[in-house]
Length: 410
Image (tube, rainbow, N blue to C red; front, top):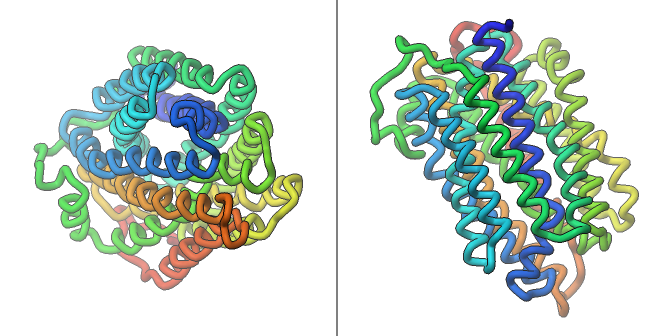
């Protein structure tokens, strides 16, 4: 029987895998269900899809530190299991949604339950030796990549049946995930490392002020924000972009997402650990951002759909970025603040996710609407390139900071 630490690692990885499958299942059909419920065309559905992304991310931004602080106070297990049960109900709600209002409610609830990724990341940090953290966070990325292989592929097939079918499948998977967690997930946060809950720290601003005490965290957080803004171009616009630029069907959209998920998973398993060990976490993150930027530039100007698949290998190298940044930040805070850090990291990601659809979707809608001055779907990737460049410059200029315990190559 594996020890409790190993079981916790397996559970977090499997949870991310199942959640990614559920998330990926619905992506190919989201434009279709928005057009169906809103009785609108693609350009207007793109705008509405942007607001759906904003409400999801805004709730996650506000509740990320709350979830992280609750995990530091009461343990990771009750927070994570409660969120998994909520996900199951939420996917079912969106599947039955009779109007856009219900779909917005479903996305708001998904943002609340998605804030549990902070406690999940903290659970991984709880059971990981400092030298293993980047590798274990890489396993989370690999699980997400594998989920994105399976999820969009299934979603594309189910989407050919109807736009609601993938939501029902996601609800079933979330239910299985919850039941599995009840049996398999042990508590990882030791009693001696718990701290009193403090409302002043259970919000994004309070968490920011608390983490200022730890040198080197905020520069990485700043780079992480700009990277999240750049990388959110995919979940915010890919399905809409693919239809506007290449007239792809849900099946082809699902296949493209599945392929990039497979490539990212392979990168996480075979590349991330080796690159981090050889070059250090900061250099690995810089390499991943540079590869992503090359892909962004290519997608900006491509007009032939099949050429997209040639750049997916390069794009998949962006899987280096988040495990390396997570490792950089987690080394810089003590054990009793890991949940707070991961919750704050979730708020950073959510802030990027708030701004991304508010920025990318209106731009895509403007340049693809009937009567646009000129048609330019690639505008969203041009903007993403600029955001990624800010992240790259920030990491390159960052000074080495004290770590807990000291690390090498960071």
